[in-house]
Length: 110
View 1 (tube, rainbow, N blue to C red):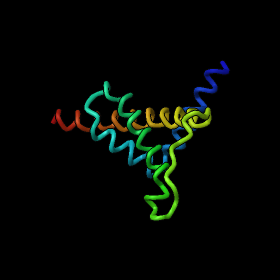
View 2: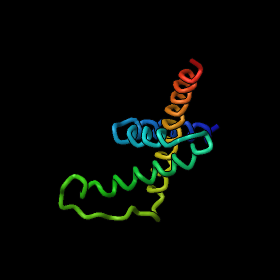
View 3: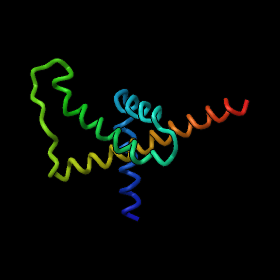
View 4: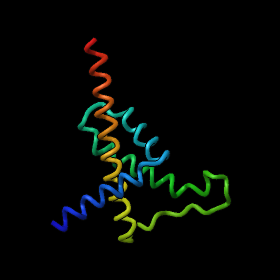
């Protein structure tokens, strides 16, 4: 039961982390390119990589003089955060694609 509680907590945290303009735009772009449910997992991984890249390039993108650094790939906190973001993208992209399929199916029926 504790594992289930932890999984639900990760899903909630992932949804909360993606539920911002950056995350929603990345998810929306992924859904535009998504042609079927088979692409759901790979596009969620791509969205995660884009999210991490934007976070790492933020000092340069904001016009500042900050350094670009690679993420700490060997730290547990990085992978935990990546898992949380991945789960968030799974949820958001799944919801967006479901809505997209409903809208376009309805238009095709008329």
